[in-house]
Amino acid sequence: RDTVVANPAYSYYDKEYLCAVKIGTPPQTLPLDFDTGSADLWVFSSETPSSYVSTGKAIYTPSKSSTAKLVTGSTWALTYGDGSSSSGDVYTDNVTIGSLKVAAQAVEAAQKVSSQFAADTALSGLLGLAFGTANQAKPRVKTFFDNIRPALPLPIFTVNLKKGAPGSFNFGYIDSTQYTGAITYTPVTPRYSLWEFGVSGFSIGQGAKNSTIIDAVADTGTSLLLLPISIVKAYYAQIAGSSYSTNYGAYVYPCSITPPDFNFYIGSAKQTVPGRYMNYGYISNTQCYGGIQSQGTLMFSLFGDIALKAQFVVFDASVPRIGWANK
Ligand SMILES: CN(C)c1ccc(C(=O)NN)cc1
Image (cartoon, rainbow, N blue to C red; front, side, top):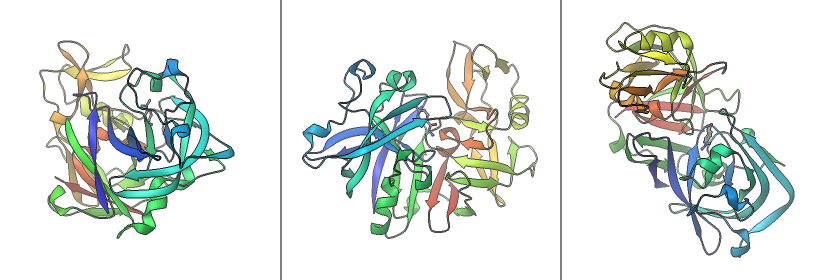
């Protein structure tokens, strides 16, 4: 069991949360985006064209690792929900998170990355924490969590992200100081090999509970809280002066206003996302980018960092199930 610090990147926005991962011998430390919405561990590498590697970015150089082994013939290619992509070949090497070490972990080295990843000067790759069946390597490889799970006291990891401050991913144990009240669990249906669960209803601010079921995915790799358009419209109807900006393709609101809380229910347990968490950044002196946006044509809602940073979440592979608590 162990814990690793999750540092928010792009201060104020909390765009993503990065954790230090040691790869190879001697260890090469890379800040990776721990992503419960995908299942590949991929890294910027010595095989990534240097024009796509921003100055100072840490990369994985297998030739400098005495324990690196090329997996001959294996390849990988990924496309994320926002249209970003990456691809390359596959090595195995020692990977250590905190004190948790997996020997011969599959490490997917990038030979191509899209402009969104090239523009991201903070991360050196992603570490997928979704179910292994979502892995996109050919032939498929196991995630770090798949590999470390047998060595953990409990087959779980917990996510305690914070607004504008370091949080943590804990593996194999629950730190009861990280939440208040009870943890309420609900089953996970890995229909898409994701941490997909049912939300039993929602309310806005002090409003009445609307018992409509929301089909949700917990995704630490998505910054925002993406909901059905009907709920999004009902939310911004509560913020005077808010509007849909065609320029940004997003709902914006006057920064002078603190938006209402967004509450969602796990069973009958009310989970609260405070309105003060909804500011995803200033787009002008007066207009702010809302943390709640439409899920568009996605077949599920995405409970990304805007929601996760308000909660303590247990990702439990034993059932599978997911547990939520306020904090
Ligand atoms: C371009 N970047 C940094 C991304 C990082 C993560 C994701 C994602 O959908 N994770 N579930 C997309 C893009």
